[in-house]
Length: 266
Image (cartoon, rainbow, N blue to C red; front, side, top):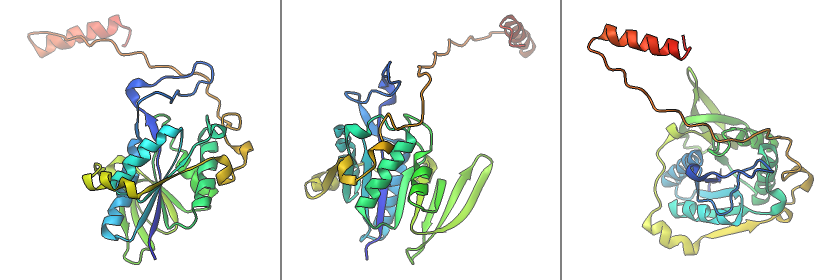
């Protein structure tokens, strides 16, 4: 039986061209250049590495977003994934992490059986790192976050991971089915291959709406989201640095001290 992996990925706005809705305080995604979220690319790469070792592995990439998110799924398929699923519906637009995890959980129930779910640690347009853990809880799955190393035993059941911490790491053993969130240290994502690009015609992207996944509409979308954004803003750019020139280190230190006192830093 094929080893089945679901990779949860997100199409995110290019960080160079982020726009914010002044009323809803949410990101404007339509018409903004988008990319595959960085941590999600690491999650996909680890799934593809399993497929490299065990060719009968089946990888489904799941995402929620506007119709243009199909472009991101095409990129994932060209890298080597087998199937793409897009949940796109105005009813789920504006969902926060809690509502998003409700949508993804419903979609995974529709996808059916799986052995492993990979997701990125967090998305660059939110940096919350909440969707993966929330999804695991709603699917009643064991989870490990911040995975920096991964090993799947030959029995296709036992997994050993290294979980990154601020001051070290943990080695954790876990069994499938489970959910893991990836960080950039896990691997280096591959590029799309020529073979993968030409093979897109043989692969499928399914587009589902809220009705298709039978999700409770009272638990999705902007109105159902408990998160309230008080204010969104672009950080003020830092001013130019100042070069201190002096003939000796002592003189440079004295000039630095004068500058810091003038700015009331010390």
